Image (cartoon, rainbow, N blue to C red; front, side, top):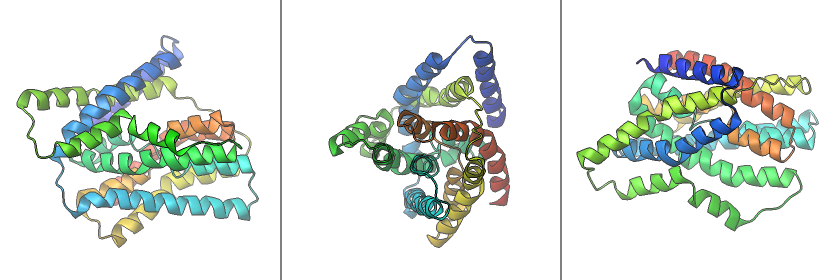
Length: 297
């Protein structure tokens, strides 16, 4: 089946389940748990050994962190220039640098450039966005809400995350050629990731537009759809990126808001309505803009 048709169909199924009230947030949470604990680790163990390990494997990590640093600096500058509140600033520092490069990013990368781009997407997500969420993201959420955290808490979150464990395991097993039955098993389980993820996204997708800070909301959407991919394009060119890796890092930079970042913002009361709006509306906006970026590359 065409990847775009599969994504659209599964997203529609999720929306139907949501609006018919057949499935709610608890079902979406169970589907996400399956993806985190089973499907995504299987995908990593299947795809990473297929990646050609040359200088291009560093590109996703370098570009991801470069884009995040520039985005953070941009938010801090805008906060000062426009006198944004502490809550809005904290929300933007969580939402804008951290795109949904895993759950949504991997299916879209497969649809846009093919399965051969998944390995680069995994590196971008796990060594970039995921690490940033569990270090910088937690620090921002706690710091801007007046709380405190610990290095041990952050380390525990990172080292106990199943996809990250499978990533380390995949690197450790690069020298070993999987037996056919194991490789086929990983492949079959990995195939379930896209339909399960998109059904879960459809079930939990809510369009809640915050009437407060409308200008901030519009600027944030433009950041997701235009500015971040443009910055990634610049950094990738600067670092000598080309070919498939170059395409993947630019497209990953244009992914919508990360749901986990939105949950953190809402949990710590950092402009929760703005965070919810960005999670909901950035998804369709990013999907449209990614088509244009794909044809521009």
